[in-house]
Image 1 (cartoon, helix red, strand yellow):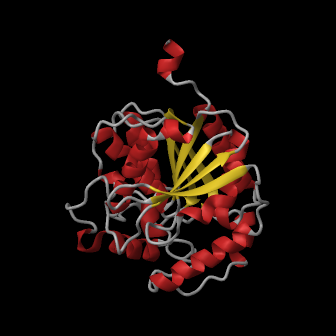
Image 2 (cartoon, one colour):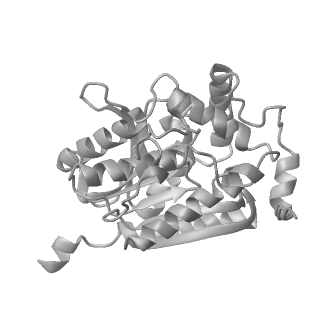
Amino acid sequence: MPRSRPAIDSELAAALQAMPIGPNGVFDLTDVPATREAVRALAEVIAGTIPDEPTVTAHEIHVPRAEAPDVLLLRPQNAPGPLPVLMWFHGGGQVLGFAAQDAPWLKQLSAALGCAVVAVDYRLAPETPAPGAAEDGYTAYRWISDNATDLGLDPTRVGLAGQSGGGGIAAATALLIRDRGAAAPLFQMLQYPMLDDRNATDSSREITDIGIWDRSTNLLAWQAILGNRVGTEDVTPYAAPSRATDLAGLPPTFIGVGELDVFRDESLDYAARLRAHGVPVELHLYPGAYHAFDLFAPRSQLAESFRHTWNRYLARHLTKAPATSAAS
């Protein structure tokens, strides 16, 4: 007998009813160019609802290497340096979005925590198939680390974070950093991350009709990211981090995901396997919450709880003294 699906949280359900959801959901990947423009327009609308943070400056920087990404550097003007750094990967299923889309709330985060934020404008699929985005993440991480002193940043206090598709890129970047022997980041914070191209979990099969990154949209995104490699053995962990069999040596990890998110089970599995490999994990599962609930229902109690938990984790980890400094 099939099990019944949990109900959507009442506040989130009200927000869902107010959304203009088309036949292909909020994100229509049958027309990627048009949806990219719609995402830009939506980002402008959201930006208009968030008070500006004038104490935080924003600078676009091109990383001076071949096929290197642009980054948006946000930094509080009055915070004493060298500043800890949060490296941020925007959402959009690795097909949509741009680095500056999250700048309004990232500026507030930067001011509140006294940290710099580096938002990576990684290349998108299908123009750049995986693992191109993860390579951009690795290149940006190494460049920021190598040039931290000149930028007034602390190379020993750099954390990775990402949302949805960007969460998958943050996880893949952490794997590249480990496997190539670069200095480890302080942590990886994964907001409902996109990790597994195989789409074989229960939540992947169950979440088909909410309208926000359901199974059909996810299948189209992975097709764009991997082409005919999707679901085959020809997929590396740098394209789909759930493919990694060895998770030892990765940084402490935060994972937050909704109970009604298509990524729920791959997130729970990744958390369990990280812990089995000795990685400290903080895991939060939000009942009745669909994908990106904090963006679509930002004033809901669940969204506020998520932001509070997220900010507390960042504050604890970014303000920690590096082990080498503590021992000296």
